[in-house]
Amino acid sequence: MGNYNQSFWPMMRGVHELFNHFFDDPFMELFHQPFRVDVYDMGEKIVVEAELPGFDRNQIKIEAVHEGLKICAIDQQEIETVNDNKKYFKKERSFRKFERIIPLPYEVSSNTKAYYKNGILEIHVPKNEGLKQRYINIE
Image (cartoon, rainbow, N blue to C red; front, side):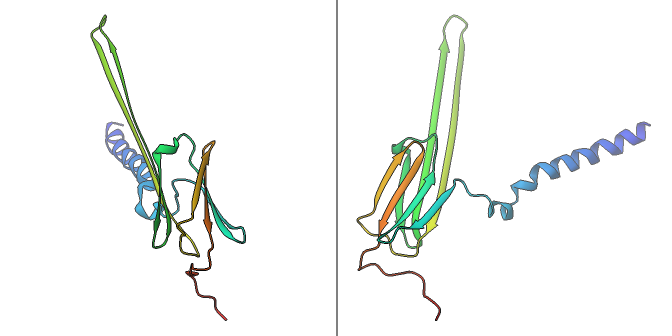
């Protein structure tokens, strides 16, 4: 029985580690998106809706990039608790960063507007005449 325990537990620990790290595979990250996005055409504009609950408006940055729009949301918090009666000190930190590039079929106009309410970021990208379509139609 002693020999069984010596070989069984290391094997189980290996299986446990394999299972825990299965989802850490960089290939699996291709299927995981940091936040949900809807993109739709409203005729004269493209609308992008991104779900970013728990963020403040000043924690969200939107950038026009070659591919489309880059949305980045960063939440950094630091909480300090000091209690002199117990000589106790505690400092907690949390950091969240979500970043995603949303490909768009048109160049991003300088007239683009963004709105943030109740955890939903809504970006309106006008399709001006000067904007070029990024994709080529197949005839």
